[in-house]
Image (cartoon, rainbow, N blue to C red):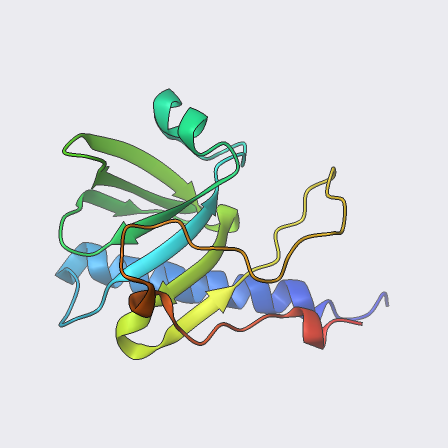
Length: 151
């Protein structure tokens, strides 16, 4: 037996949590004051977005799902959604394994995933800035990093 890979099992469980949350939003909409900041690796091979957005955000983008979104469809591997970028609706497909942070500031909940690429230099900063037009105080949340549990 090779051992139990708790890190990957935990990542799978947390991505399942995001899947369940997004399925609920697709069915019932966003309840109350809930809204999400979702930071995504735009270089992920299954990430689908307009070329102009990828050029503007070649490494990552933080998406805000709050007042206006459309066409939210969740599948086993990710979700499709249309978001508004400067009054231009743009369809996106976000694979769950392209998500590096998922934050719901309305309840101070957050998850952080360590995304590993084959060309990583191991000098990633733990504090990656969120790129959003939202006020800074709305960006706070409790972020859980799995690195402290890995050996």
